[in-house]
Length: 289
Length: 90
Image 1 (cartoon, rainbow over the protein chains, first blue to last red):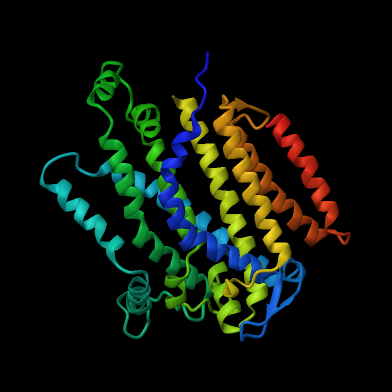
Image 2 (cartoon, each protein chain N blue to C red):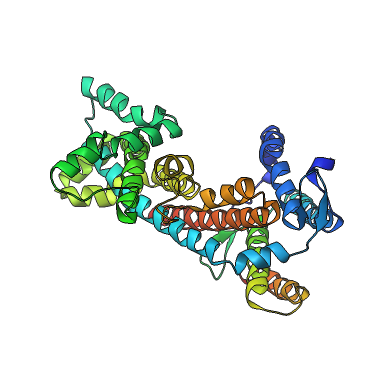
């Protein structure tokens, strides 16, 4: 007979729930309230019903930003997850170099977002930046302020530089937790390097990789500061991600109603994709045993 | 609370969500259950099915708003049918 689930333990998370209520739930409820009203400031609101949702759903600007955002997150996951796993597999397992590697890998994670943006903004400049100047010197036509392709490459490379270490560190932690007995058994069976990776390392890393994928997806899907500092959403609006567009609408144009409707749809999309990722990966994990 | 710009429709909306959460919490305590595998081939409890229902309903309403020109109440009817299907088969 299967065991029934006891849900009483959920009461233990009540303190966290109170904290989250203040930091997330109440602001979110306010956003829902804003999304059905119009305001001209002065704390005066006028009922607008579902008009803003209708307007936003039929607005190409939001769909274009969503498309760019999905493309950005997709590229980021496709590069960072395999690269992070590859780095973790090749990191030393013991000795002095372990701590050295861990410190070097953690460095980009400690730099604040706006500083990362500024570093790359200067790094990529053709007149004074090392990267931009070098590329220009060897004849590559690179200018992230006027060429959309160069702008995309810059923000993707910047994000890979900033966050791949997180994936690598998580994957490394997963690898370290595999008991030696597994490797010994594989050796007795004369398993190939690929077989060891596929049937021992990858399944054992699945738990931490799931966290890595979720974190990287959510972070990249909500990215704001770095592309804003580097390209300001340009050239044109080619690197205007959802959050940059949202801030322009809410603070730049003070269109709080449409921006609130936009935020809710943004939130629902993140919730849906995260749930799908989480469900698929927990089920994969169960099947792998 | 004035800064939150409350309206009656949104207040009712949140009351419905809150009462659903409370009802399902009480149900989970009074009648603990075994997770089951449905058409999606994933293990779900009652709470999971409520989550799938609510999230799906949000998208049904948005799709109706964006694609159809009829009254929004029809989207709620579709949501009710969807909820029954989720609780029965997922």
